[in-house]
Image 1 (cartoon, rainbow, N blue to C red):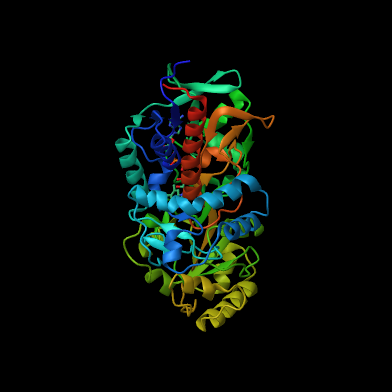
Image 2: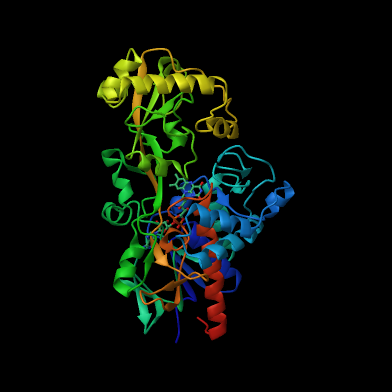
Length: 477
Ligand SMILES: Cc1cc2nc3c(=O)[nH]c(=O)nc-3n(C[C@H](O)[C@H](O)[C@H](O)COP(=O)(O)OP(=O)(O)OC[C@H]3O[C@@H](n4cnc5c(N)ncnc54)[C@H](O)[C@@H]3O)c2cc1C
């Protein structure tokens, strides 16, 4: 049978471009379909941080690591509820991903980095070892390098082209439907991202996003409409990862990712609905939504006038004036004394006062015996000796899991990125990568850099597998 292409890739984000480039490196004729007017998807918006083990960057910095160690950490954090085979593959393939990207022109310097904005090797909180690789120019830098490779390898790109269905030939795929046209190919990679921008699918597949109510805001790219879910329904494909995704904890009035939003003042305490301190206020984003869930979905951040007036200028949400505006709207509560503030937020005053006295005593000395926050602060290079919360007026605002970053319900894959149907059978020629793939991304976001690494590792593997399939079949377009 004659095909238009050897491979059609649905989506020009990180996963899709990685698939296209790796397949083209093996000599395949590839078409990438992108529904939007520009490439990049959520990957382009991201910090581009990648989790990867036993890499050349780690070695150059003397960091000892192995895929086996990463696997153990990954599985433990996810309580072994993700698929072991694909996850082992992910950890193993992450090692060579970094060198592949560097060959394509991505710059990841062998230097320690203290945050997701400084290129190098970092640690975003939960990792057992320095494993977060931050590329120069972040997600934008990754996409640019992949797209340059795409052009060099003469991979076709069709912008404004939304794939709406798969073409089948018996159990196997034979192409895709794009608007009213058909494009044929013996292999298809579904890399259309997540479902965060589709409220109906979010309700069904990630109900935790409802906890934040009207405060929910989505930072994922507009193309994250979950088109893979319709493909699953229509073609009897299996989905995996229901109920999982990444929500970041933000103040009730925040509307932007922290790059624009800014950060709450370090001298703040998080208390539960009983007025008791209940967490490390700087707990890693991988685990903080889970901690909030444990406490009924939200906590109160309490801070004082010194902290408010000390907020640095230049940010959209966490700015001194903005906090006052939110007081006016009743979102931030204010009172002259702590017992009055406790009454405003409906917690027992004695508990709040006691919690703050203890917080001031512990963090004033830079050693948080209760929640070990001094360690999180030190990791961020913030002096763990915090100023006390003691100068009225005092403020309180709800902290909620309100920033929806990505979702984890995808087409169930095996350890070769092949899509499985609801009967557990491989669908010949069909691969999935990135957020559209299910099995590896779990309830707990691992890293720094779980999702971008997952997109690129799977994309690269899917491209290689498609090439192997084409070469084995000896088919030519
Ligand atoms: C602000 C922000 C910061 C983040 N920071 C990090 C980070 O530092 N590290 C990390 O690991 N993760 C991070 N993430 C998450 C991570 O970026 C994404 O989960 C990951 O990049 C997804 O890659 P993808 O290729 O699956 O999807 P995308 O990059 O979203 O690409 C999917 C593409 O498919 C297109 N598409 C959709 N449907 C169709 C269709 N039917 N036909 C054709 N095209 C279609 C979309 O328009 C899009 O371009 C961040 C996310 C955001 C939003």
